[in-house]
Length: 331
Image (tube, rainbow, N blue to C red; front, side, top):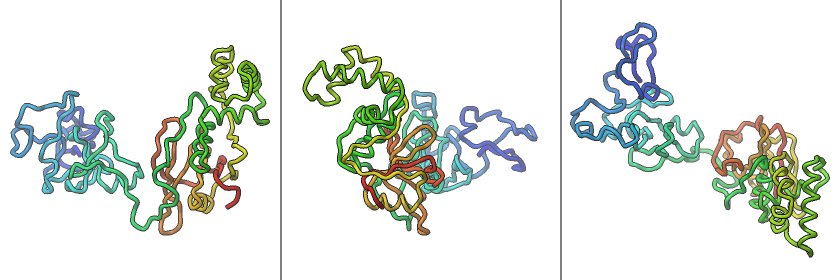
């Protein structure tokens, strides 16, 4: 923290003040804010023994100050840029580039993030005092159900295909299918659920391409021909239209208008996947953590929009817009 000299007024966190450390005034008494005794914030004064500030290495090439060698000195106290409390170095995660970024291990655990990343977003993840990458560990006493890492890469979306990408991913992981996002989109567009002009246009273009090929070609081949035979517009319209999950006949599934902790735990124990409907978006849950009281606190989920999978805080309210449990027809 940068504090008012008399320490009677609030200060400014080191991250917010990192771009302009000199001449920042207290908004109450207009005194210049200072680094209190016993704190280490950013680079220590030039010439301090045991640091690299007595050398001509003032930036990392991107305009940021390099981390001083004294950052790992257990005798030096640092302020967490998230909670503003002070800790010694072994209790902190530090950016390998930016000296003013430090997150205590307690804040990182509470954040439920898969890994701690520097807010500057140009240097990657934070490191512990031994230089190891900071990754989240399951809290003591918590039980993991399902998986913490997916069995394979998930399917990503184009346009508004999140429903299709989530369907394909959920089926592949729970039932061993090999659906693509376009395969799952096709299932919906050929179903009775699809009644829009976009669906009608897709079906007509698909059938024309199928007849052009002849025989019984697979869907991927037909869609390739659609792109070259006047069906590209219909295909693009379908990719950019909303839809609903539609499952292959061989894949069992259950629909829940709201998902309880009990349903989620049973689904994960059975190695199923759960498609969760958020605000205009679908994600796929493949694992969860349960606290000692039996409540689900964290889910491991895949986002078809970004292609990323990571833990996320869980609130049953997140599942009140509808969920599909994929891989079983009974719990």
